Image 1 (tube, one colour):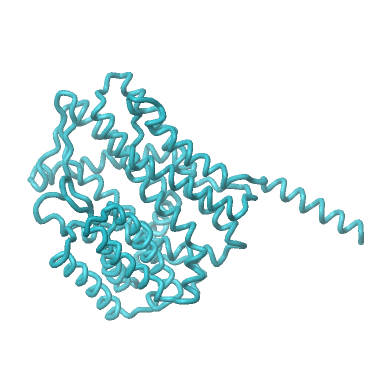
Image 2 (cartoon, one colour):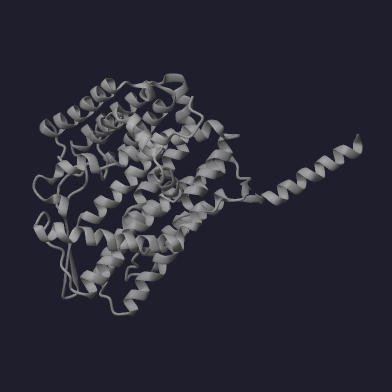
Length: 433
């Protein structure tokens, strides 16, 4: 079992979050006129779907998360303490985001911003919370999946993948809502592959074996696109009848195999990259702010788009044109500067270590995790903008549910109190001797 810090996983996580940012900042095609913000997706350009086979990196995030979760779970004193720490660590960076976006829509509306662009921006800011909602569920399942991994090994992700195929068959035969079950089957299967990287054969593959695995994953993906009901794009496209992401299809599990094999083939080079002067420091900085970067990179885009498109009348160029290629670096640079400013304001919520110990019991933590996941999923589906028909139909109920789950997981005794009790017990024991 792996005990020291794995630089390969650090590179995978950093590369994944940078790919997420790049994809989200390059996608918008925006224009504004007469109170209406028109939105499009640059990756809907004919032929650009191929980019999504590498830029859709959520499979890598779940893979790296599975490896990191197994390593930390093995080191934890108990499943209860591990779950409490994980739930709180995942939820803490979300609290300032929710607080800001409960206020911002009304504030901007008071400044005269029309409802439609407000609705679009508020929806985009909350949309990415789907990942955290699903990831919390995966974390809740981790103790069970670790036990399953110990007993059945590679059979576990294979069975989850088979279940994902059955779900897709039902989904594409007029049972559409059953497709959301793959939010568990697909992502848990990929998460389980992270276990096999830490303790199984994935971590010791030769380059030839890794490239063979990658070719198999991408090959099956291509065959399923060519002969199945799956779209070629690995992200949802405007107006497309089917999305591989919402809900996820089993195609993403095969894509994960292709991507993981490709990265494992170059693992020595990626480890060498992580050892270069400055790169390790950058990886550590980004790793400590992973959730904050993920949560605030879209608000950074909203700020830039709000100032340039809504405020200054800028219209993004047609994707792929010379003007688009010229303007893209400037767009990225401005978004990056805004993101750094937001991180200076809000990243300390994530980087500050919690100096308290939760006393919540395991059933309480499960309920807390379900509440957090449900609240975040509600926000992802409905957005932050309040609706005109009352507070009960806006973001407030979902914020309350997620926050209540966070508080339920955090019934704590401060470390100082625990130390005081330990000293008291030690002194009593010394007197008895």
